[in-house]
Image (cartoon, rainbow, N blue to C red; front, side):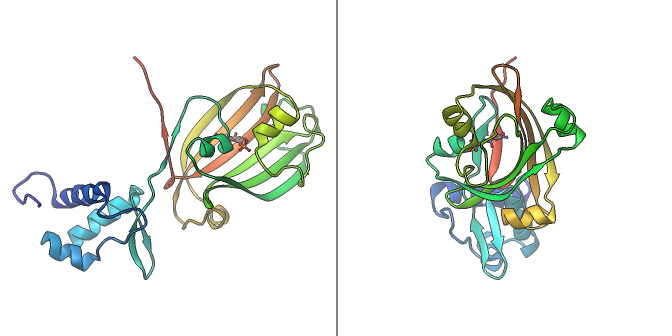
Length: 240
Ligand code: 16G
């Protein structure tokens, strides 16, 4: 099964073999993979080598460990194209997943200078500050911190903000969403966010900041989205 003469290191060969078995369905999503001891015997390598392969697959998001229970096959990451200005609800529905929302905070605040500038607010103008956990099939995917100018959404309240923000804007308020500018960077999750996203500290996250505009050029939201790096992969087609 493994080629000991090969220049490809053993731990990589083991990773490849485990990936092949996952692809073939021998280790389906959610199933436990054999223990370190069993894999050591199966591949006839040291425990260190097996551990290195597993750690790499865990870091790549293909496997996950549960303390005291074992190591399991993870669901494939959501592949999110970086084109088109879609909403979280649309993104999950287009994949046949059920989107969910949990409102953590809903407050009226005077924003800091950065947010005020991005939203082109006058001095002292207020925004709604909303924190939501976004779910797909009941699994936490992202944490979203959204700033919305109060003057644009005077009727918005904790009670009315239950589903999709974009459908509320487009269907209920009949406003036309046009475009957004986005920045993405890698970061480490903060402890309070880790708890909401049900991940451990430290864990990698993908941080996306979006400023979005209506067709008349008016900015209507600034959003900081914290995506679980083990659940998300952003993809784009590029041309030369
Ligand atoms: C996405 C957007 C966010 C928007 C939200 C609306 C990114 C990085 N962010 O999460 O800016 O507010 O969708 O979703 O894609 P909703 O209509 O489901 O509330």
